[in-house]
Length: 153
Image 1 (tube, rainbow, N blue to C red):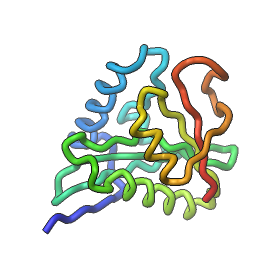
Image 2: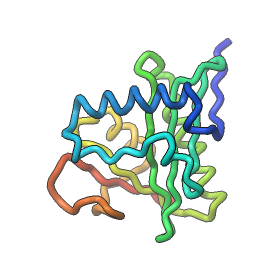
Image 3: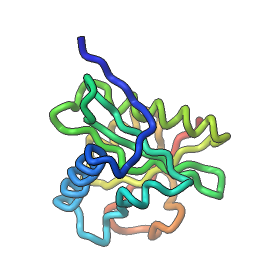
Image 4: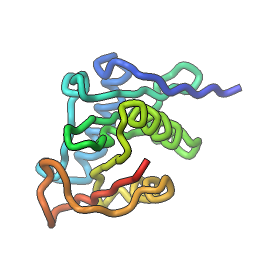
């Protein structure tokens, strides 16, 4: 019987680093370096970030994080599921847990930036209730490959 878990984890664990490296490689094939807004494992250890690892039968197969912003929202970061394990609802489980963590912090709005070439990710976020919004934070306004979305919790 397949068992899925989603738990807070240290982003510098070797298995977390491997997933993040896979994500970086994937994004590097799609976008120019200046179009990628990546946080490395050490940056993901910041006190304002909650990092999750998704496991299938004990093996790390996905990750995701939220960064708590001083402006009252949380930004979704580093969402990724190993392609071999996609289509099993893992991303939805990670997002549900990220939403729980945000609510526990008193956050009622999630925001994210994704890329226009990541059609599957955009579709997932729409299915999960995210809608388009304006650029936020330090992201450049207009142009580029970015798509900005938000969800009220």
